[in-house]
Length: 196
Length: 416
Picture 1 (cartoon, chains in turn red, brown):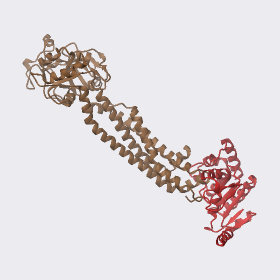
Picture 2 (cartoon, one colour; picture 1 turned 45 degrees about the horizontal axis):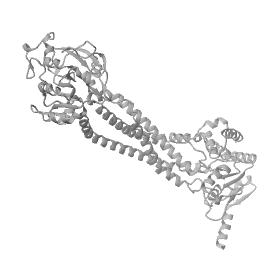
Picture 3 (cartoon, chains in turn cyan, purple; picture 1 turned 90 degrees about the vertical axis):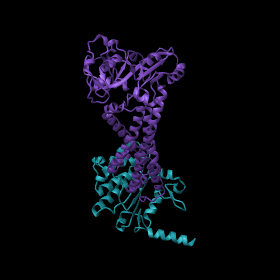
Picture 4 (cartoon, chains in turn blue, orange; picture 1 turned 180 degrees about the horizontal axis):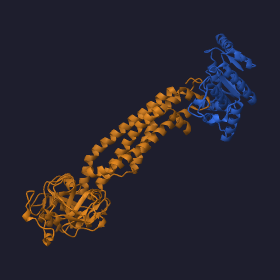
């Protein structure tokens, strides 16, 4: 699903609501059959760790940890076996065309393109059902962007996870079947609000 | 989590090292002050034990204690030999040790006494004196040296030494006509005994024969082979240590000596005098303890400041932990763990600084201040101070940690 909107249009707020770091002030929000608005903040954190992967525009990795450390840290917040994590990490890196030697390198020693691809691996490490991507390509040049999109889509396909991809860049919309322009849903909300 | 905390500290090693240095110094001050305080008290209280009364010419009890037991300063007056004989003949007295002070040997005090000293003197926990080598003196010109004298001056058994008139490490007036032979070396006691040269009362008397007003008159000086030396009778002593048959008699005898008719004498209870002396020094030490605790508090506040200002630069890092599923409490514990790691490392380093410092100054402290200090602080008090410091650090850094906790609650992704 492609979520298009200019900066300031509420993309990040919507994603924060979906991720459960923000709580809706009114109404209900159901994800995967769970009502996020009724969960305690502690359970929402747990829900996020288990079911939702996130990729940001930049600063996706803890800079002073190795790639391996970053992946392990992400799996730490759910009860996953360490060996399972290791196997998945290797598979993910392979499908993202990253050498497994990269595991030992510190995150801030990688190129931006590599960092974004490791971020995909990090986001998928806990086998989430939903992947939230917030402008993940805007720090990349065209070439890296195309590679990133291609790899992201292939991993998504392999895992069968729902991708919610927010960007201002309408040229990326061609990768997606469903497309939502944020301006439209915002307007409908406002309209409802003024009707009430 | 520990790995994350340590890598995080390492990634900010510039400010971390500076804070660690400041923490280490203040930890060393806290541990050092406490260690020296405990050790000084210990070495004070250990100096003399099992003595019921300490007698000297009339003076304050602290002065008497200082010049007789600690060998610091000089006696203002002496006790006549007749008084000594009279007091020791009393039925309450079980044993007595005469002290005759006033001479020195290369900066170490010379103590004239008799064989009772080796038999009845006790220090520490009622421990008797022991010989590392040799035996007590049996001739007026025999000497028994303390362990530190033997070590510092590299004296061997059988070596001849010359005593000096008066005290001080360089004396222009030496009793060099009558050298003494070392017949014994005492085992280390950790008290002023280690820094003392012991000779018989006859020996003290002998070297002062032929002296008039501090000047030697050659014609009157005896020869070392003179058999009459052993028959010399002292005319005065400086102090007297008494052991009584029954502790009940202490106060009666004390009153009797304080009211001694033929000369002005003071009898004191060494334990009471030690306590009074310790109170005077204790005030100063409490002040030092307070200052060291304030220094540590300042350092710990510095640590909190450092952690607090790092929160700004770590905004996105902390937001990322939350985004990948960390609870706010993870962030609180992460910062607390970093603080704990720093304070614990500083405590360890501070401890080692104290060990190194004491190791380097041990000899100097014992020579100049009669302080015998263990290199490795290991009393419960030290551990309590170290544990308390670490705990204080953990508590003070709860300020930045809880702040980070509340900041990380209910914020949009990546915008802490």
